[in-house]
Structure formats: C-alpha cells, structure tokens
Image (cartoon, rainbow, N blue to C red):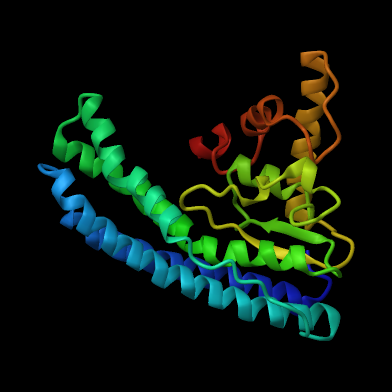
Length: 269
C-alpha cells in the first residue's frame, strides 16, 4: 500500500470516484439500449453505436482527468513534491467502437443464433454490455496510471487496488504487488495488469518504495501461495516464481478454497 496515510486516503478516494464515473457511464448506456431495434439491428446499430461511443468518450475523459489530478496529489503525498509528468494515453475511438459493438449488437445476434428470442437476447445482453461500458470508462484512469508509471523513473511500478471483496482473478493479480508498469518485469507480466472485467472495482496505485500488503491483501497472498504449492505437488511440475505463474494451475484452486467473491463458500452465504 502507499507509504503515507495521506497517499492511502487519496488512493481510496480516487477508487470510489472512478466507480462513480463508471456508474454514470453505465446509466447512459442503459438509457441508450432502448434505441437498439432488435427487429432491425443492422439499421439501428450505427446511430446506437455513435451515441454510445460519444458517451464513452465523455466519461472516459472524466476518468482520465480525475486520475491526472490524483496522480499529482498522490506523488506529492508520497514524495513531498508533485513535480513530474502525467501521461495521458487519450481515447481510442476506433478501439472503443469495436469493443462496444461486439458487446452489444454482435452479442445480441449471437444469442439469437443460439436459439433465444430477439427480445430475450436483447434483455440478456444488457447486463454484460453495461459492465463493459463501465470497464471502458474506467480505462481512462487505469491507462493513465500505467502510462505515467512507465515514464516515472522514481516509481517501482504500480499495483492493483481491489475493493476489499474481489473476485479470485482480481485478487490473484493484486498479490503480485507493484510489478505492473515496471521495466524490470515488463517481459514477464506484459499487460496482464490491465486485464479488467466488467463491473470490476479495481484501480491502480503507483508504488515508490517497498510494497507491504495490507492485512486483507496478505490473505490473498497466502491463498495464492497455498494454491501454488498444491499445483506444484499435484501437477508434478515446478510453478515459476511470481509474477509468472500459470493461471490455469492456480486460479481455480484459489477460487475453490478461497474467501473471494466468486468462491463457493462466499456464493453459498
């Protein structure tokens, strides 16, 4: 976590503010969903898509702007000076349009192709689409932290910050600590830290010193280590030192016995 109490407070305030922006983006996406005519998707899609990309651009920009202010304030709290560059990746309209198109009209067509009624397919696709819109909005802030960290020679890297009740996937990425955006481990983890699912409440925090897990995060680490040890024993092969372990041998073991949102024990409760 952050070195200072102020830095920690700034990170949490930033996370909550980002979620609020994402919720606004979702609300607009849901209101625009009615303009998608399921009886004639090809005709209604262009106007629907244009309005959704415009909404994504608006809230993505707010997310990026919020992150820019946060990064400067956070740097000041952690280092005593807010001086330093803030890198804004900007809005990739073509990529955003492709993502929203696939999660919206294309998914509706796929569901119809699987035998669902047109109205049922449209209704069923809305929840996932709403989550994707939230993710695309929050990518403004997430990408800014990633790009800024890579340009900051004083930063160790950035770490994933969960909402305190993450799914197993998010918890697993959080156990790695500040490896993301780090030139030293870029070849090992690549862009894995930028993998966020719909409705994900995680954000990112730049780390300038030694990373010390919180008590809750230490539980995630313990779960990870236990699953890794079992994978090594049962599968009969060595699991590489983090952060390069194989997700297919560890993730399901963490979920099976874990304390995470999608673990059986949590779901049963």
